Structure formats: structure tokens, C-alpha cells
Length: 87
Image 1 (cartoon, helix red, strand yellow):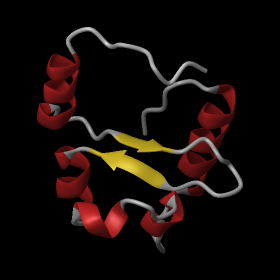
Image 2 (cartoon, one colour):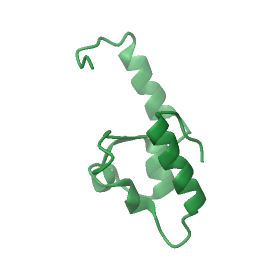
Image 3 (tube, helix red, strand yellow):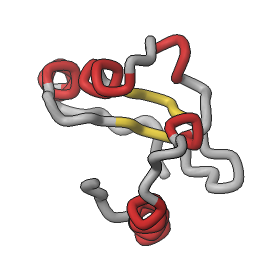
Image 4 (cartoon, helix red, strand yellow):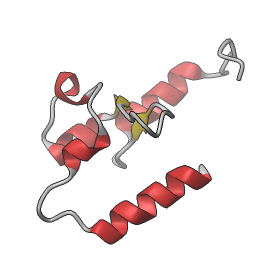
């Protein structure tokens, strides 16, 4: 993977992430030790977390007694297949 890729209109893309009303959360790719690396304001609004509380935390921090395990399974399957997830 080339980490030195130049992204055209990077400011535009950043603006889209920041202004999107859709939740965007990005983790590392280490399935044995997943951690949030980026979340957008829509994620923070939906979860009630502050950015410094969530970055570096595992996604399991969002699980609670009302977690729908079917959705969790679908999310894991989407990650393993490297496809997007809506849920």
C-alpha cells in the first residue's frame, strides 16, 4: 500500500466527511485489536461521545444491553469482506 498517495481535492473530501449527516467511523485494519482512528461529527452527535473519548477505543465500546447481535454479525462480515456496511 502506498501511503504517499496524493488525493486531489483533499480539502473538499474533508469537508464532505465533516458536514455529512451520515455517521462515518474509520478503524485500523487490525481485526485482533480494532481501534477507532477517525469519526465525524455525526458519529459524535449520535453516540454522545467527545472525539478525545472515542479515538483509540475499540468499537465494542458502543455495545450495550440493547445491541442487536444480528447487526454486529453483519458488520463483522462486511469488514471481513472489505465492503461497506449500513445498519
